Length: 111
Length: 113
Image (cartoon, rainbow over all chains, first blue to last red; front, side, top):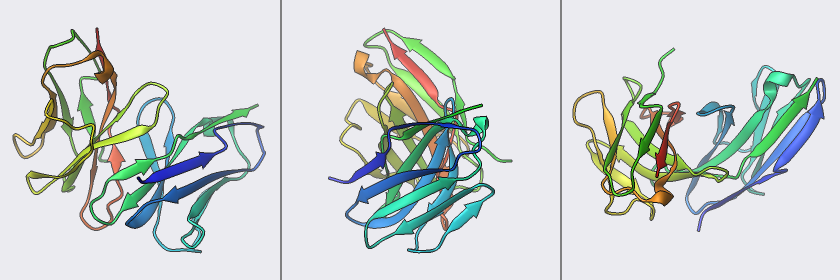
C-alpha cells in the first residue's frame, strides 16, 4: 500500500525563524512529489518535484527531492504569520495521476 | 487567474438521500479528480476521470458513488444514498495533460444527519 509520512505533525515557531518540513514516501510507481499549503479549505499548489537534487524555489519557500532516500523537504525562511497553515505533501504515481497525501504538518508562526 | 470552482460550499442532507456535488474545472484541463477529507484526517483520493471515463478509482469509491461530465464544463460527483460516514469535505481538482499539477477547488462541506 502506498504511504506518505510527514514530520513533524505540528510545529510552532516565531516570526523570522526558518523551518524545515519533512516528507517520506513509499509509492510503487512514483512519478512526482507535490507540496500544497492548506489554510482554510482548498490545498493550494506550491511545488511539483520530479527530479532528484534539483531545488525548486518560490520566494522564501524552497523544496528538494531525494529519490534514492525517498524523501523531500520543504524549507521556509524568515517565516511570517501568513505562513501559518497545514502543509501537505503528496506522491503521484505514474500509472494514473492519483495523489497519495500525508497527514500534513500544522505550522503556526507566532508574532 | 483560472480556478476550479465548486458548488455548493456547504450541503446538509439527511441519511439515505442522494446528493450531487458540482465542479467546474479549469477550462484547458483534461484530467479531473475528486478527493475527500474527513475532519481531522488525510486527504483521500476517490476517483480520476479522463477522456469521458473513469481512469482510476479507490476502494472508497464504491457503487454508491458515480461521476459524470454532463456537458463541456461541469464535473459532478453523485452519492446515491448518503451515510453518516460520508460527512466530509469533498474537493474537486483538475490538471492539464503535460504537467499533471493538480489544482484544487475550495471544496464542498457535506454534512449527513
